Image 1: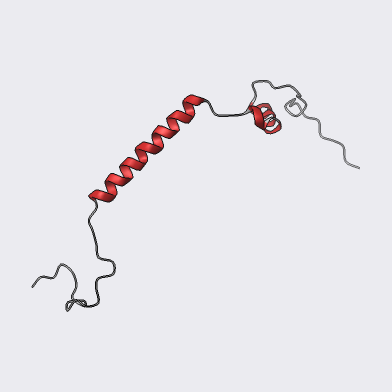
Image 2: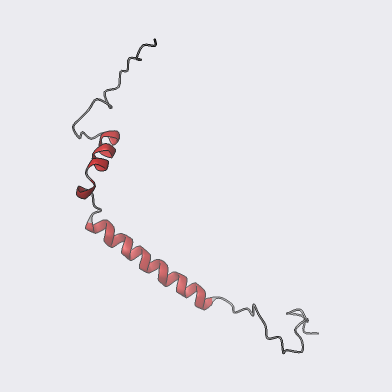
Length: 85
């Protein structure tokens, strides 16, 4: 029979919420209703998403238009683009 290894760590034996990360993770897991992001964090993320959407829209509008599916009725359908000679 094997013996149980002695440990110096008290992290697993702690039952109260201290400042330690492991304890906080356990407390957060046990109390999901008390955990919520701060209003400041939520507002910051909303602002970041708005800015990201504005930048994406600007990139799309400034981008160059390409004809992915050119009309098949064009006489130069097989002619490569940019070859104007």
